[in-house]
Length: 369
Image 1 (cartoon, helix red, strand yellow):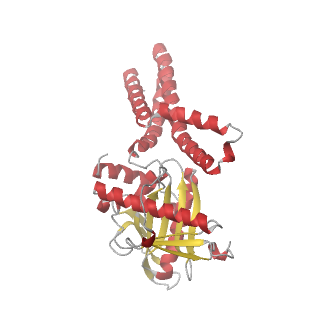
Image 2 (spheres, one colour):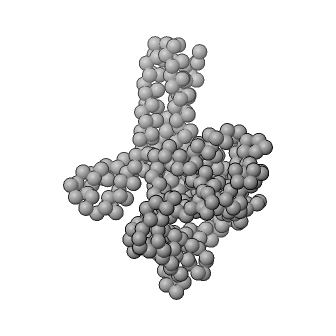
Image 3 (cartoon, one colour):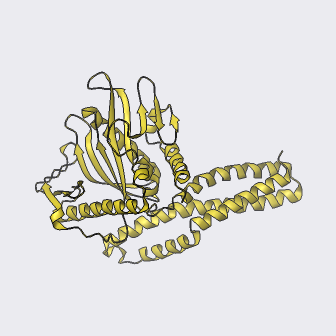
């Protein structure tokens, strides 16, 4: 049976952790922001400005994703304190055991929430542009890119995030050559920044029947919510238009509405085809391009290019951040953190939390905030 002093100390510990979390996650400010947005949403003309309304809805979802669990752990800590005061006064051993059990569960909830405190870098809280592109490996690489897309879509769904497809390029034989998504959700950019890099798959190829190695690269760029003050010379842009088409030839437009922009000085290429309007696709492509250019500037100023883009040197051997092995054994291992599991099926079904959480803790040790 737990001692009274032990339980009292444990409650004090979780209360201190809850207080620190409320401060680091700005609970009071978020509560005020939530009330402000909800008041606007109650207005009858809220949807008259669809873009502003969409941003409000997205921000409210992100605020609630932080505030709701934070309020829940605050209430649980208060409940533990109240119950402890009751059972301690009566010297109730069974009641003390119940409080100790509740405190243990509360510690687990706090451990998950405390990860949010690690996401305090600029733009961690923002939505992001998320892309996957094939590397070395031919048809196997295209199928691997499609497997990664399925994995991440499952992860996004579990998180309650939105995934808007902006561009999709099918593979010639199978799978995909590339995809561009906009991910909306609480701390989407912060959680996903550790996924940037090359992902390597080893398996028996369904195409050759031999053991093959395939590569696909993931990139994550913040969808900067403030205006991006980057001026791009029109002469530095090569703009191509083409007929848009979705997965498997679906949603094919009869006009050249899709837009591909190449930034000649840097070689950056952005393609967008989700809207029927060429003008809208061009605006979105320019925003993504400016976001990528701004990220480059920020990384250069912070001298973090090598750290942030480790593993993006080449989409091939020796540059991977994570290995997925199906043959001759089964294992997924992160090269940076050393975290690994033999349940590759679970990982490919979108269970990435262990890898992402470990990366966040690892990144703080590498570059303290």
